Length: 353
Image (tube, rainbow, N blue to C red):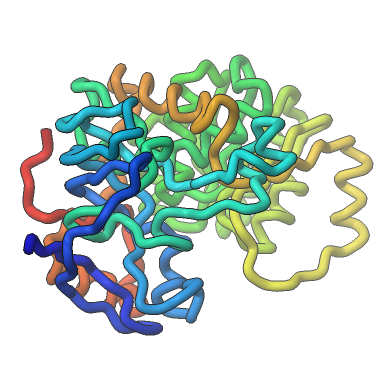
């Protein structure tokens, strides 16, 4: 019987390479040979903080590969198709799904979290979770579709960024992808803010009109004066810490739209003077959850495909590295001592195509 190697999280903090039987697939599912699978920031607490729904688990929701088999009802795809994974599995029956609000599905499953994921040589997923990649998009780029669509979701919800002054707070992988998307989609300017000078160097290399280190009081004060007078402003908070939420309110100009994407994992207090900024500036605060819209998986994924096809997104500066399984395990286990400098990609050794 053919075997299928997985990088499995055996228990909290313990990774192993393990062989399983080839996965079975239902009639509406496809079997994918995985080429590249990215480690998401949301995977880190699943590995190190007992954050998974169950153990053992095979993570991986940012992956790309080729279809090697299709179920009899999976007629939208063919063997040999190059695809990436749209990992949300909406029920498509609840009231919000019936409105096309798939990101808000009440009864969803999720590849690489609530069901086994793509950190494996082969994985079966519903055909609706497959997004076909054109020949103009590499399979490495395909592994970046899920994170870039997280940033595209608020851009789309806000009505687009044409002629808007976009502020990206948090220059991680999603932040730098969102920055490039905003530039390509017609933003009047893009400012990227972080506390890490190295990330800000990357931001400038990738086209940011301005960068600000928010720990540099002089830089921040100068930018605040300018920012508070900037109209037509779209702020996208991606860092997911209380300090950056408060920074968003502090820097916002009049009538600014503030989209909150980063997930905060602890309670925090907000002073009345901070809250008052929402009122006095007449800010719009909007939550952004996941990256899907109607028709599933949504416009976000089509735009991502166009951006990559037109070479408007560069991922070369966003990689921590591409690792074979044993090296991947060693790199992930070392994250508490050596933080990720970009996207950690798991590879099974096939050449990108």
